[in-house]
Image (cartoon, rainbow, N blue to C red; front, side, top):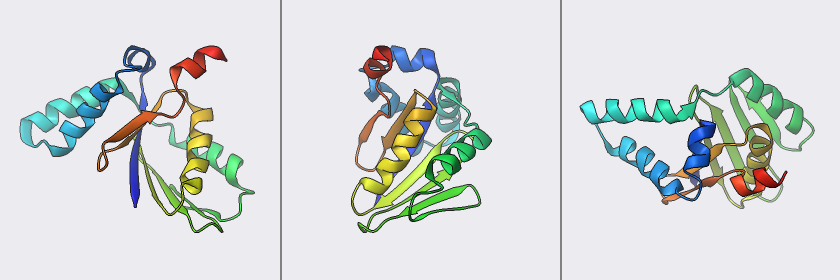
Length: 145
């Protein structure tokens, strides 16, 4: 299983840390393994560099974009894609981040990534288990459009 946390990064930080995403990844990684006062300090830093998720806007966009997609369902702020290629993805919406869990081939998670990158330009996906991270819509691509 692959698990990603997706954070909506404030625009000024997204452009400043483009190419230096590892610094942001390290912030989230340190937060995950910290406790006590350090966890509180890192939480404040994360809240400073991230934007809250507009749950209603995101739900509407997902429903609009995926309602005709075979294998798409929704229940209680959680969206599911199960396709014929034996891949599954589950997207859960929280106040400050999204959690994407997927199995099998990458096509089910890619469907969610495509919708999200069209919705907001500064989503950062982080896989803390496998030490992977990246922008859903890289800044270079944003500047060309």
